[in-house]
Length: 92
Image (cartoon, rainbow, N blue to C red; front, side, top):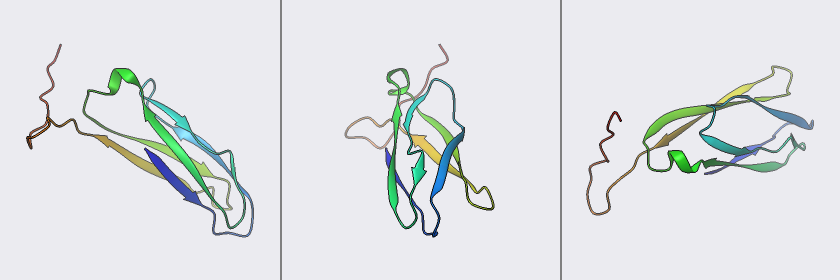
C-alpha cells in the first residue's frame, strides 16, 4: 500500500514513526518533507500475514509546532475469488 504525505507549510518537516505492530509490516517512510512538497510512503505486509485478516494501524509524527500525529488505519480482508464471503480464520 502506498500513501502520500503533503507538506503545505513553508517549513521543511521531519517525519518519524511513533507506533506500528511488531512483525507485521515493512515500512518505507521518508525522513523529511520539504516545504510545499509531497512524499510517498509504502507499507508492505510481511509474508506470514498475507493470508490473514486484520485491522491495525500505524502512527507517525510530524515536526510541526504542534508535533502533529497521524494514525493510518490498515485493514486486510481475504476474499475467495468469485464469492462475497471472507475466509474464516481458525484458532490453530
